[in-house]
Image (cartoon, rainbow, N blue to C red; front, side, top):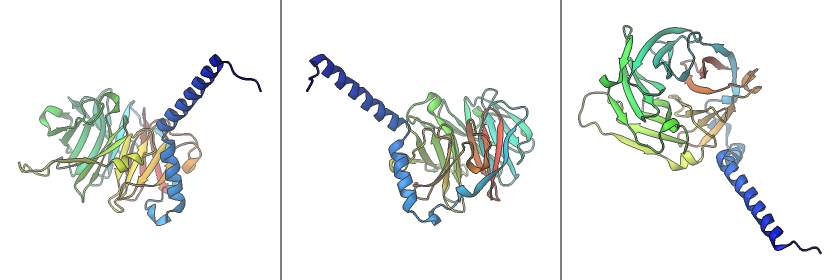
Length: 302
């Protein structure tokens, strides 16, 4: 039997170490273990756990260009106005859209930094997130609003992990539980719960509580988070991932129970959604998605 020289043995060992390290970091980056665990869990669970029936949705509006916009980010449904709201960050604006993706009005934003998410809270009240500054900013909007200045608004700064382009990408609000869910994009992927902001009144004794769940975050097998949507009827949370091209359904315990792909062929899509940045759900259960730079999608159950 031919023996390897000491040098060749060292080189072979180094090669094995490099390959194993590459496999480890690839598995960690793409959340392979978490995905395998999710698939095993879904295989054995009852279909009742998948409250929203994501696999039953089909695209009805695909990749419609939102005229006049070039960097949409996030999406929120206003049940009073029966419209959608999004934000832009290159030229900061809060934009109101019709349910078929038409621009209804544009509200100029001043001092909001890198606005990445918007969420409806109550009639005329919204929260906008500043990704770089990790700020949550409460704003009031009515039919006459044409501009908003962050300096005149109630704000909350959360120094959670890394800033920069790994900050707050998505918001969702649980009206009954009075919880604001905040999606941290990456490093690590994280969902934060905030109670006590925005304040419902001027009560100075208002208690602020910020929590997160390591167990829930560890089960998120997506590479990033770009938007959130809370379903009041089931108590489930939808998490949108741009890089993984997935919509993930989390149950009331924060466990993934279902998912659907935003790639070509899924839900009747003729093309993959290129960069999904916002998700919202209407009163009738229609799912709306926006993708940078200015694409609009709508999905309804078959």
